[in-house]
Image (cartoon, rainbow, N blue to C red; front, side):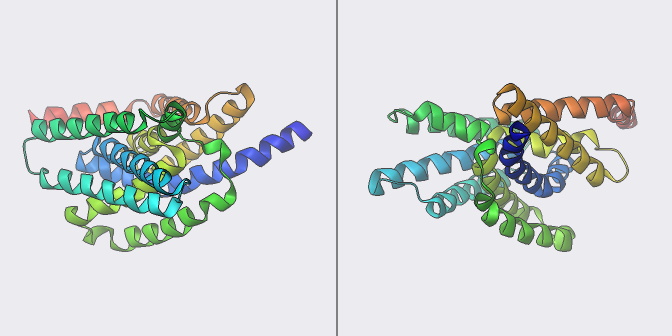
Length: 266
């Protein structure tokens, strides 16, 4: 009984963090898929991670400790700057856009490595920003995320039709930045894409996407705690597994719809 109680005390803040992330990432992930900018979120998440690492390094070198608010501001500015760059190239040929996104991603990824190269704990910090530390979160760590996400969700559902591309990119960047600091780059991408992809052509997609996401997080956290596996990576694999099971259960609707659309184009 004590073993289960200890696990519950660790898992419930992590599950709460997952629910908060899913609350915004499911509708935004669907929008990303509909706009055809799938890898944009990964590039922006990596840019936000670069901003976090840069802010932490500058602040620690000057003041000797971490300052979460300053880190967040610098990370948000970096992510918005990256999103503005991607917005300016949105009308270029698709292959050119993909090349820019790839270049931005690899620059930000290698930039993080360069920043951490002199840090004796650089490997651990890199792992933390990529895979997250969701199991070590406390409920108090999520208060800022909760209030900001409430505002984001209200703005999104009330003015979704009025949010043009020029506003969507920075709006998206702010959301991704906050999530990256909580759950890491990999879980951000998985939470955005996997649930929304599995329900892309279905009725009531948001409800189904939320259910897939919640199930993936719950099972992933339980498996991680039970087998002593890294939580972020385990949740990503569980999200993918639940998505595959749902895909098989619905008879491959995505592939049939995609083939139908392809025949119409020809």
